[in-house]
Every structure is written in C-alpha cells, then in structure tokens.
Image: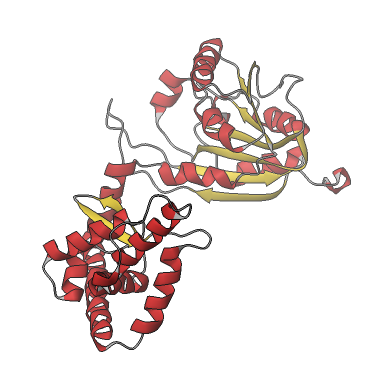
Length: 346
C-alpha cells in the first residue's frame, strides 16, 4: 500500500490541495504500527497514554513509538500535552466529516479481530491497571500526612471559600460588623450585593481600601452600629455577624434590629465565642461579653422573633496565643430565620 501512493499531485488540478491532504492522510495511516497506536489510544480512558506505556503495550522500543507518534501528531490524528516531565497522547477530537475520521472507522472495523491488536490491548490493560495501582499506592502511603500536604499546596481555607459558590447569586447579604472587609470580599463574588456595616471609622477605611483594590463594585460600605442599622440596610436575604456580638453592649437590641432588616424567610448567621475566662479579651480587646452560653443566645434570638434556631460548636481549638500562651476559646455558629409570615411570631 505504501508503494502505490503517489508522491506528488499535479498543481494544475483544481482539486490538488484537497487531494494532496487526502493522500497525505492515507500515507500516514497506511503504516500498520500507526493503526495499532490509534487502536490503543481509542481504548485508553482518561488523560491519555505516555510513549513508554504505548511502547510496553506494543513491545517496541520507545524511540520507534516516538517516531510514529510524531507523524500522527503532524497529521492531526493525535494530540499531545505535557504532564510534568513527560507527554500524554490521546486521539485528536474531530469535528464534522474528515478523512482521518473515516479512516479510523475503517481501521477499527478491520482490526477488531486481529490477533496482534488484541494482544496489544491485553498488554495495555495491564499497563493501565498498574498505573491505577500506583495511584492507589500513593494515596495509601500519603493518607497519614494528606491534610498537611494539601494545606502546604493550597492553604487551609480553599475548600471553605469554594463552598461560598453555593450561595444564591441573587441574594443581598449584610456583613454586619464588617471590620476590615475580609468577609465582604469573600462573599461579593458569589452574591448580587453585599452591604457591609462597621462602627469603627478606622476599620471602615481599611475595608474601603480592600474593596477598592479588589475592584468589587457590588459592595456598599456604611458606618453604623448593629443596634441602630443605617436606613440603607434593608431586605437582606442573609445577615452575617461574625465575631461581633461580644463587642455589642445591647445584644438583644442588635438582634431585634437585624430581624427588622431581614426579608421574610431571610436568615441570620452568627459566629461567636463559647463561654470562656480569657480576661485579656475584656481588658485589652474591649470584649463586653465573655462568650455566650447556648441557652442564653437561643433565648435572645427567640425573643427577637427568630425561628428555626440551630447551633453548632466548631472544631475545638488546640492552639494558644503567642502573647501569653493562653488557650484560644472555642467558637460556635448559629443560624436563625425570620418567619415567612409575621403572624408566626411568638
């Protein structure tokens, strides 16, 4: 077959370019070894095969396989992409009718029962099974240190930040007690609008710088107190109060005002401290409350009109402060909803 193909096509023919491409494709796929490679690539799942894996399945030197792969890539039949220090090869995606698609179909039919090709496929199966076992061996060996390995590469909070994408993109969210805008910046890409309220002018200035640097146009920053929220804060789908309530003198009043600015069916998310005895928080950081007992917080939320109150203690902290080695207090998260029907208030 190789010897019967013409080397050149007369340039005077109007069909010369398309005929030449057809002949070049025929010449590329006329080699039985390249047909065997294509057949193996058709049977490989996932990202593709390395030259060494193909060579093992075909029982050929890697240099021979590399030469054939080069011809297939140049013909547009195979794609290669770098994977670390090696290359992975797979069949090129073909859109619409093409000479390569037609010839691949013909080759598949003719090679389906070829003994040599079937032997190739059996060896490839063993190669792929060994690759899967190597992956399993890696995870089995890495399991004890996996959390540390993942944290070293991607940080401690990437998975938590990714969960924010589950928020409704049409929501208006209030970040009440926004501090320097850390949470507002995390929320903004995932919701329609963030209204951030902060009573400290210095904190608010830092938040404005953060939001300006990040070019977030869907964040509104307001000076205000939780007990008397600005008039711009209204119709919230969600209110977030993170590590704020222990600074608030009138907690029931703050909860009542938050209830007022929530939509019917909207909800409040509180993150705060469990009861503790770290006097430094009161003396140096201005805490008015030494944490909140579960029953006390539930009672205050109920009195403000909230329903469906849920509380969860976050993973216990085992760290200590760098300043005086004091144990870091544990945190809790609470969720409570405003009823859909105001008449449902108790």
